[in-house]
Length: 158
Image (cartoon, one colour):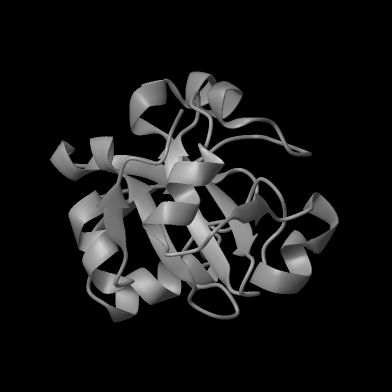
């Protein structure tokens, strides 16, 4: 039996004793979160995507929101105390986070950025986020995740 290759995200969760399940799917290149949820039979409202943005101050931020929703940049900026935020350009994702588009997750990045999770996750027992590489999803407790990364829940969608 082949040894499972752990991602930085999984190593972080193991180190912090956070329970999680891994789901994998066949994928040669990036597909959007809605298609990922469909491929795995997951509810789209419980499947969250990670968006990385930078503020006027030059700081970077992670925003987790349901895959079918759109980030409200004004609400996102307010949630992190910035005048405005802009989404990171796709070509910069790997350099800033250490992850590739479609495999980006708020845990195990090169540096831990302030993370805001959409408040619908606050009432969920478990939700799905990227596992740190394309084709891998992690199913875990949103409240345990937020506590471990010192994030917060807020309304950040349109």
